[in-house]
Image 1 (cartoon, rainbow over the protein chains, first blue to last red):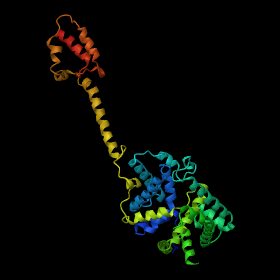
Image 2: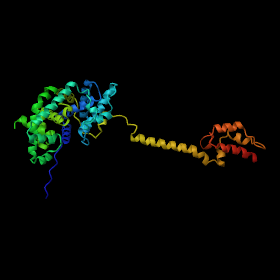
Image 3: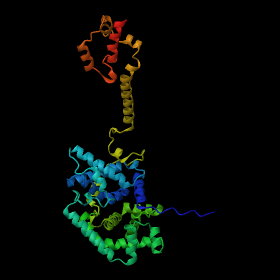
Image 4: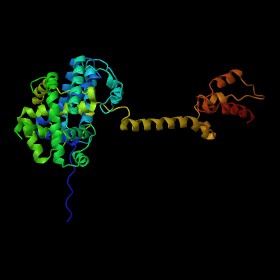
Length: 211
Length: 193
């Protein structure tokens, strides 16, 4: 009898689906993880459509509420962010219609400026979700993360680079680095902890201290 | 490994989709119990964004935003598993668009009906312009063509020619559904009978 092959390791996308299922089963905290993960991206997306900073926040809130209500209909056929993206765009359009305002940019421009496409001209514009202060804070965070990366031991830096930038799975990283998967998991965790120690004061300052 | 470190290690693995079964349940229990789990999750998401997007990263999530949302979510009923809908339908059930399938079928029927009507107008008069067609001609026309046949040489009425020329239509048919030439010929031939 041949041994049963091991189940493939889940991806971060699978994590989203697992969190959705957990939410539908009654765990609201699971949904909060999804909110934390996508809040800034959704705000940035809405910020390309409306000029009013307060309105961006309100529409983002409404987006997550609507998504929560409709969560039972999400089956994982598309990525969770793709599904959420459509809800955000439609919620923003509806809000603008209710306020009898026109969107700042068309949806086609938004499509080009999605986070997957880093070359969009729209992407480079300052959105209403951003102020000069938040842009400066983001630059500081990026610089701190990069300097923390430079200070990491080689094996930690390589592990986290292969994971976060190259998008390799733990199995693939284990093969590349010629080490067990458990070691990969440990190295990535230690790398994140080292970076987090440097960047946490900036994140607390930017996003509020009451976590 | 102490509790806090264990929590953060689980969150690191969860970011990468590496938690399953028991570990996933334990980690989610920790998310419910321990605010450190949310902090770790936020830190790691922000670090990943910064590494992938550089200084165009969006930064960490806002605790104020989350607290406001938590209050609203508490007032919401639990989401229920339902038949799948698109995200658009989930947001706003709009009337069917003009390119909806039902409208396409309706447009197809309308096109066929219009084509049939046009074909009938063009083809029918010439195809049936035989003796029975004369019988079907409206009674108001017959006196003009038949009851007053010219005697001897035909004298063509120039005003009639002008009128017929002015009202010539597709396929030389008049508004009376008869070819204009046929009317003239009928008048002329009537004289010979």
